Length: 135
Image 1 (tube, rainbow, N blue to C red):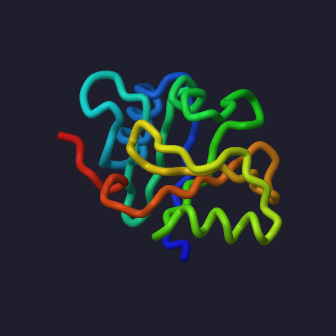
Image 2 (cartoon, rainbow, N blue to C red):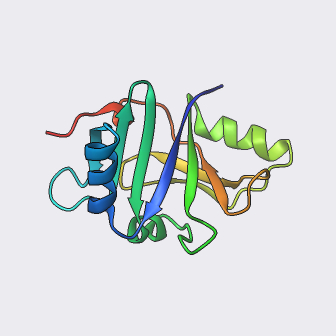
């Protein structure tokens, strides 16, 4: 069962993007990878909404192509990523890659999104990582 979702925007300047969403739009930073120093991946919150930002190098490291036309992915949490991936494949959704463990210790496959050119959906296993606070 799918439980929630979060867009992940790919950016060349993550620090500038974080500053914009935090200082201009009022998002709070909940999580980043790595935990200290220059981030490669950041999760921001605004009310119940989550927004992730990832550097091009972090996106490339997990097998995605962050070039023009592939500027974001939609992350969808679920209880069992392997069962959901199998269910979606059985329904005809092609997988761009099988589940992998990312630098955020999340197993995530990538499925092309049929409704939008250049977007992708990833389904990490649900857990506390997406809500972990940055110290």
